[in-house]
Length: 264
Image 1 (cartoon, rainbow, N blue to C red):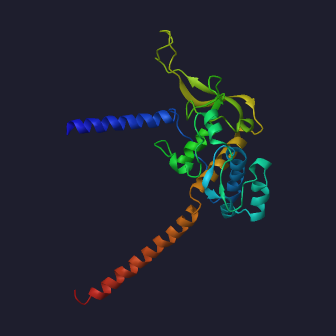
Image 2: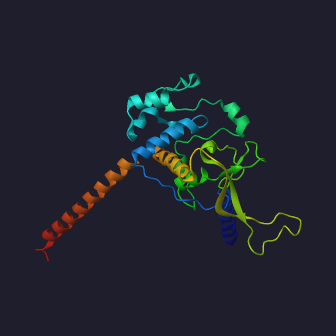
Image 3: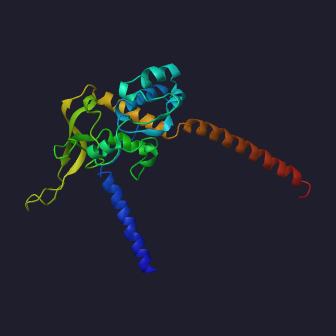
């Protein structure tokens, strides 16, 4: 029994360590998610189609479901389906599939880019929700000449994905600090560095830092909605169900008292 308990605790420690390593040890910022904000969802859908869909698919989301965020069929066809000649395979009633060649993607990035339909629901962890992870991830890229793509990420170290929004954000450099008493440099190694959560802007982007944060928030908001388009309807129905159960419970309680009052 003690041996099984020791094995279980060791496995748990490995899982926790793996989760911490996957987040790069950096805390996640709170994502400004509001899936009832139609304007934000529409902006996020535009960013997703223009920047993400070139490599990533959303194979469980249909183009016509964009009507649920306030877009008309004409707007969807004109702004999202009327694209370059190589993407003419997009059809209004079909799913959002990327046109990238899987073999080329694996050669370029080391693996096929994952489907993003439910990415916001699959990346939750001890640091926060999946939306928090994505929001922090999209704002944590920095230049790294040692990486094949020229980019790295604080949240996902040695990531194979380049920073597709770098022209909007510009180039930034993370600011590190060396804790007091850290060892390593004096012994010929590299001193332990800790990310301070602050960045140095190296070159400006087309958006200001605040504007880029809003754009990243819009993209994450759309990804959160896309993971479950019916979530707002589910919440509304759930509220009414709870209210009904509350009223019905009160009626049942009073009926029970009325039925048993003569027996008492």
